[in-house]
Image 1 (cartoon, helix red, strand yellow):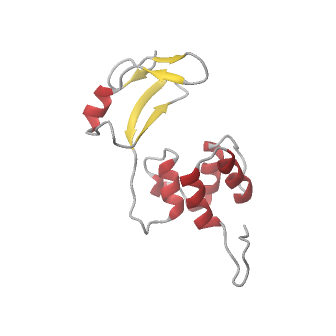
Image 2 (cartoon, rainbow, N blue to C red):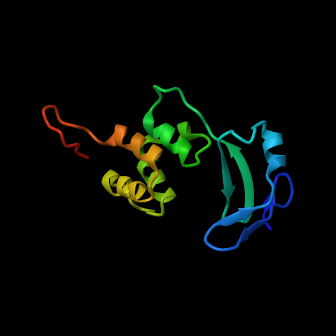
Length: 134
């Protein structure tokens, strides 16, 4: 049983995949239908919430867009010098700051959208070469 702003929320582990009781009240409260993109936030203090996915313009900074995809509700406030650490911590690599390692971890988890955004920010292709470099 998790605490939430809308009352208790049941989370069950019946194998490798967690199961949540209905979250309809959260969808109604934040105005998202069942086809909207959102996050289920389970905090270490036993609190639960449902948050809408933050969207950005197509020309927005790819790192800020990727932060939104991994759950940051206000990615624009993350200081530039903390962005790599934020990605590392979210994937379980606390203390890591090397883009190559962080990107590899997201590739291993098959986070295609995040990988694409990180590559557009961190991977450069020297002119006249086919292979990207970090």
